[in-house]
Image (cartoon, rainbow, N blue to C red):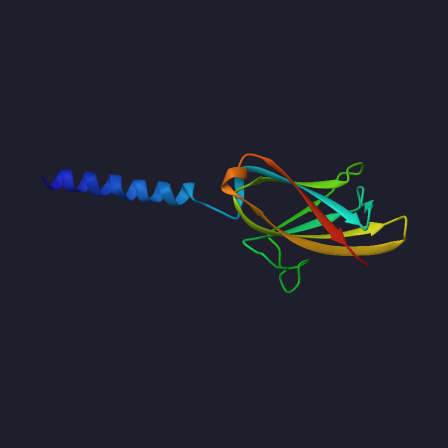
Length: 131
């Protein structure tokens, strides 16, 4: 009888631990991707952008270039930055770039949410910057 109680307890604890693992949010390890398209007005920032990502955030942190969870750079010939393997949740995207057409450094951010229904999709998010 005692061994049945122990094995039942082990099964219950394993099930609880597994359910917490399956419900992770606001982190990497998922199957969603954000294509962060960085613009200064209507000009795409091709290859010059650095993107800072804050997990579980709906607004910019006090200093988005030092208080971030992930830092990515754009490809030299691409107008967006790929943020891959995300789980459903809230993310704040903050971009810093150089607009060569206006010869100015630009920055800006936007909050976005990956919904459960978007957990295996590519989501395009526009990040507008200003100087």
